[in-house]
Length: 125
Length: 236
Image 1: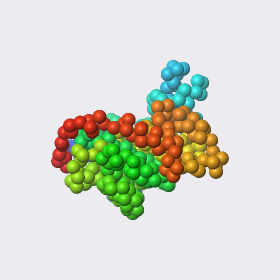
Image 2: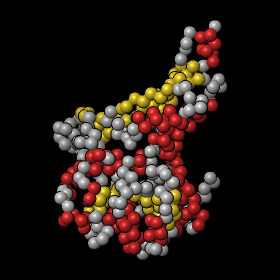
Image 3: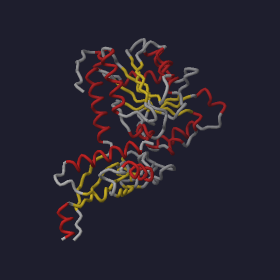
Image 4: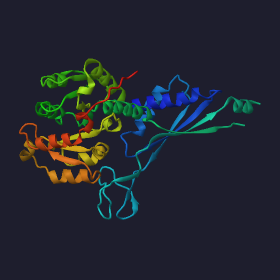
């Protein structure tokens, strides 16, 4: 359910950026990074985005979600490992608890692809 | 030629909530208040725990409760019987409290009372093991509850909340004799992802473990809550 709120935050953030651009470019794609060790379900985000972006400046924008795996670092073994979400989080070799999460907590707008008026002009000429 | 440009934003989606949470915490700090975010699945016993806590701790500390409940004030009414201010935030259909909702509660608290008089604020979150874990509200510590009836595997299935918890209360311990459940397994599953968390088995019914919980609460208090406090005003 909170994907609705996340999507609201996403659209507001992109809107802030868009309104700060002098030429109000056409946004074609938003790239989002979503870690696997978050409470966010990409399919729910896609659905919320489709609904909330309707008839807005993002109506034609595509949301691309890249899932980031959960990777932890075991200090005792001095190596990274992939905890198995829902099953096991401790280091598979020495069973130390997961304490240093290197990736998987991301909830980030990575980048935006856009087309400016100038390039539209170039395209049409 | 079709030309597409890239703009790197690298903005966290929860940036606005995080900023709001930091703002809330700054108020708590200035008032010398320690704030706990109390989270669990529905029915794990948050309100029962707070009832027992208020009965004892309100004799030595000035406590207020910010209560998130989806549609009713039932929980808030239960807690008001202990003579402490209870600010009820009706969250509507929202499945969690966010920093902005709690800011509303803080402002009501500071307008209706002298906020510098308080030592401790419990934020009772909406019953949900998933969403509240992602939305900080300005707390100094996260307290998670897991009732013994929920099973050993819940920490593995809902890891984000248990990984972030500072204190985990395993509640309804009075029911343990009637269940085939392995407390050590629960503890082991939580420890896999959170080596630092303080784990206290409790029963609001029999009082088991509550003395340890109260001691943990006292150990977390802001030292300035017993000293001179500064007064801040919020312009927003």
